[in-house]
Length: 478
Figure 1 (cartoon, rainbow, N blue to C red):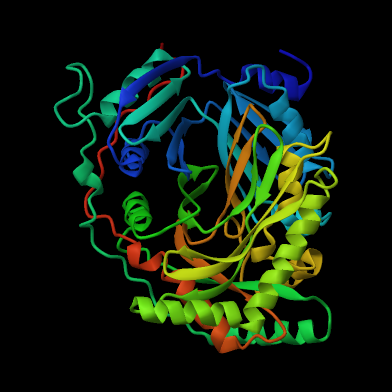
Figure 2: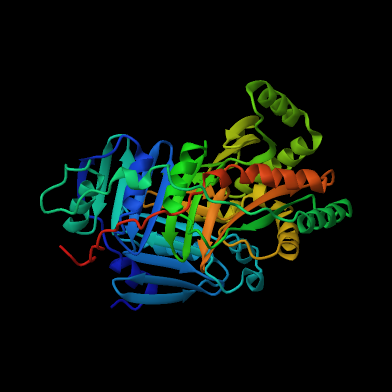
């Protein structure tokens, strides 16, 4: 056993050395939920990016950050090392020690990681702040095709049978998971009404803070608890919601203690293997109306609303400052400014800021620089974090954090965890927020949260029957 914890962990992470290609359903989202519902392993993650769905199950290894320690597991062993105030630098060191270049991991970062990144470990709490899963099987899904990588032959041979049409599996295999188990006929899930007064008060107090020049902007959110009965069907809700949304990214996960299904309107950060960095702030919102004429009117209203334009401009300015801190001089550019992006039930003002990493920086320092997104925090970030912590009813957890995928070529893609249904500790809930400025009116900010909730609430589905699962594959099975 190696004495250095990071080196010992890196040498124990399983390699996905077995690869097959197989036919898959023409709808990659359907293929992904088949695999998610098959019960192949303890944890799974689904991540959609640019027309490809990625499915991973395991874990073969994990890496978890809290306010004090980096915890690593692999091959039945566990190691810890202090974060020493640099959590993502420690993560970067760990993943850069991996001994094979084609690794890919999936995971999440909680909003409270922001406190640790800004030097306030006490405010970060004691819960995990970042969790990465290194899978035992990894599947790339495009229309009609699947590329499967596994730690053992058993993994790569099981997945094609799950993706095959009924009756097309090998004689010795378990029957394929029927697509009808994920039909959209499940019962709709009722979302209870909420009292607006606490949120109104929080907005009003924050407007006072802004007018007193304690900060420029803060994004305040509210929680919508969901009933325990009937049981929420997270997987069917994801498939239903994806068909009713136009996200920048989507995700479905059960890993590191969080279960979630989301339709992210924007990315926190995208880092390519060549060092190109992008971020996509969306700030400024209007709902869609009942017809195209009303939608156009609302679009023009959004583009001409001084409060919404000011809010967006602050977000872009801060994104430029943050990306500039890690990028080569002269490489930072605003390549798109104040376009209108359609995201489910709402339309947003959108911009895109790009740059190229300077020498010595990497995907994890880019995430540290841009996390959490200004569009869920405010400006200046430290002051906004204090307001959020004092005015919201409970810690955000995954809300306003990120769901991410990172690879051995140095790339990283982090989706902002909004328009999401969350499950943890026996609870299910929604959460939505709005940017508060000096011009904000509490009634309008409340209505904005309602508009955003409509991107997901109508798509929630209750479980009707018990979904069949397949026996997990032992990671040592060959």
